[in-house]
Length: 125
Image (tube, rainbow, N blue to C red):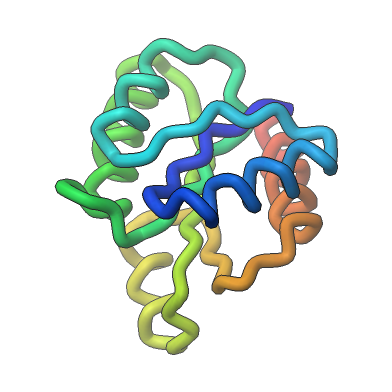
C-alpha cells in the first residue's frame, strides 16, 4: 500500500513516516499542499492521502478539494483523510462536511489509520 503523506512539521513527518513504514506502508511525502498536488499528479497507485490541515500557503481543505477535482479528471476515486490537532467535535464535523473521508486527531493511532485505508480500498474493489 502506498500513501501520500502531507505534513509541514519536520518532527511529525519523521515520526509519521516511520510509523507508517513499520506497518508496511510505502510513504510518498510532501511538506506543503503545492508539493502534494504535484506528487498527486505524478504518483500512481496511491491508496490514500493523509494530510495535516494547517499547512503553509494553502490549507489541507483547499488542497483536498483540488485533489478531488484532479481525481475526477483521471476517473479515479481517492480517499483523503485529515489529521488535526483540534479534537473539538465541531472541527471533526466541519472537516467531514467539507469532504474528508475521515478525521484523525493527533496524536494519531497509525494502525487505526491503516485499517481505515484498507477498508476504503476494499470498498473500491
